[in-house]
Amino acid sequence: MEVKLPTFDSVFSIDCVIFGFEAGELKILLIERNEEPFKDWLALPGYIVSQDESIDDAAERILYELTGLRDLHMQQFHTFGEVKRHPQGRVITVAYYALIRINGQKELKPVTQYAKSAFWHPVNDLPKLAFDHSDIFNTGFNKIRRRLNYQPIAFELLPEKFTLTQLQSLYEAVLNKKLDKRNFRKKMLSYGFLKELDEKQKGVSYRAAKLYKFDRRKYAKIFQNELNLVQ
Amino acid sequence: MEVKLPTFDSVFSIDCVIFGFEAGELKILLIERNEEPFKDWLALPGYIVSQDESIDDAAERILYELTGLRDLHMQQFHTFGEVKRHPQGRVITVAYYALIRINGQKELKPVTQYAKSAFWHPVNDLPKLAFDHSDIFNTGFNKIRRRLNYQPIAFELLPEKFTLTQLQSLYEAVLNKKLDKRNFRKKMLSYGFLKELDEKQKGVSYRAAKLYKFDRRKYAKIFQNELNLVQ
DNA sequence: TTTAATGGTGTAATTTCGACACCTTATATT
DNA sequence: AATATAAGGTGTCGAAATTACACCATTAAA
Image (cartoon, rainbow over all chains, first blue to last red; front, side, top):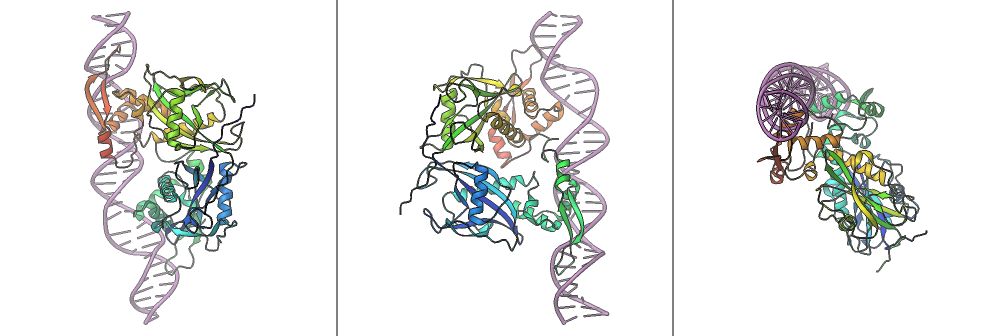
């Protein structure tokens, strides 16, 4: 028996909160819209999901089209489904986040016409955003702030080789509080998943710090599932 | 300028993972489907979201229609959007969970024709479910297992007055491990949000235990945000 | 009165956490 | 060469939290 699904002409979209870390500051990726509604407003990168792609695939595609960025490890964190959240119809949006390394040279170039530009903006001084994107951002920021405590996501924001001071200042930026240097180092090193390299920082006008690497294999071995909470 | 949204005839649905605790066992609510596809299969309670309701409202309505249960505190936990997850078209589903007290007398009576029956089933021995509902259940179970550690959700599953042994066995059932009786009690009582009553358990054929109550006001006062409840 | 079942309790060793300050090293400046 | 500047790097001690561990008390049923 063939049964037709009832449909309601609804639309799904994806919105992305992409975090980066640069110059000791946490930033997110914004676009300048080139389409109604909210033409010329700043917004999170987001667009409509097509029929023939999973939402995870859609998230990757959409982010690429709006910013030129590819192959991020994106993760869904919440779905926003208020009736009036979009002025032109019923649009439910699935929000994703990703954490990436900002490389100075990484160009941000929208591939489609829907965005005029894409750029990094510090999270501490965000302007008003289109739609309910400020809510989406806040929800996402709270999620990663909590996740920082029990998942090794900090290392996705740092360059492959980093100093302990850089790591600490990232934690301080996300958690928005000062940490004790000696205690922080003691704890991080005690986990055993940081690999000390034979290299040192270059190009600084003071004593260069040792560089470390996050050893994903060791991490996986030590923490079968997750760390923290409950032996 | 009026702009028409592109639409793709997509459908949203809601699926609910409703946890209950009875006879020392964790259970979830299943329905027997009365509609194609998967007619006669067991499934999570779920249905399609209408145009004019938010997804949170839809979750409440759908659960009520399929099980007769109302006014649960439901919470979204994940959205499932694989292209082929529904055999008849593109359906993206937002999954919700809730934790409730199972009262023997609480009748579960579907209000619509879409379900033949609704009943509690132990989580440890789940049959094959319709669609990707087994995945949805697993994702939800992992979520509440983690949340049990930092939010006072256990008390939503227990009767209003409960013994410390009941509380402990609930934790043991969800976390799937034995806990130490003395340490568990010491820790739980140390938080200060359990109110000791002047009453004792009734109808048991052994020494009756003291009854306690969860004091939500005290809880809110003590923990602005969150805490670690066990270990 | 005896049995069966669960209720209820404290201590000591260990581990983790948090507070806290100074010398070292590399570069830049004079 | 000497000095200044800036961050790198390190240890201890007390407090608090966590863990391991065993026996008597109470109630109802047999």
